[in-house]
Image 1 (cartoon, rainbow, N blue to C red):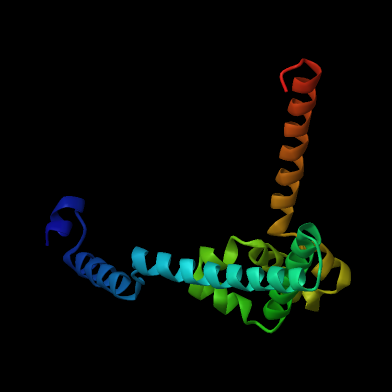
Image 2: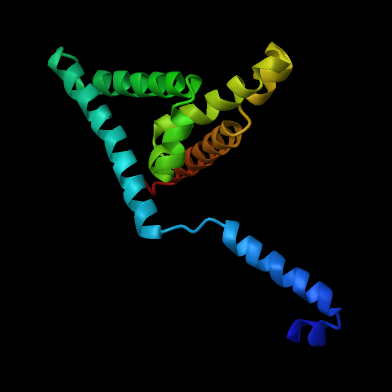
Length: 162
């Protein structure tokens, strides 16, 4: 009844507010930071182990380090897109959190997911417009920051700093 006195609302409203607050507290999920961190570590670790396995396999075929790295990236992106298409990667991302979203596989998922979701709207307005909804800003600012840093490096080289 303190609520009713402080805010000058009716006792009925105060009871409704109390019931509502209890309901919100009941349905709000609780998160354990150590548990989430462990799941992210495990998920990211498994993705990295798969990547390392691809690198080792490519190396065993006689490919050099750079070519093996390129094949590893391509295969991880392909796996991510295929798993996104079968609705497996979103479940993995829900379980692993940042462990699944940070590596290159997460970026591939962020490009593939909107295109799959909006394909019913057509090639142009669905896939074409929505494919870079999440990845577009990453690409834009990545290109811009690399251009800015390249300009700084070029100017520093011309001035003898580097």
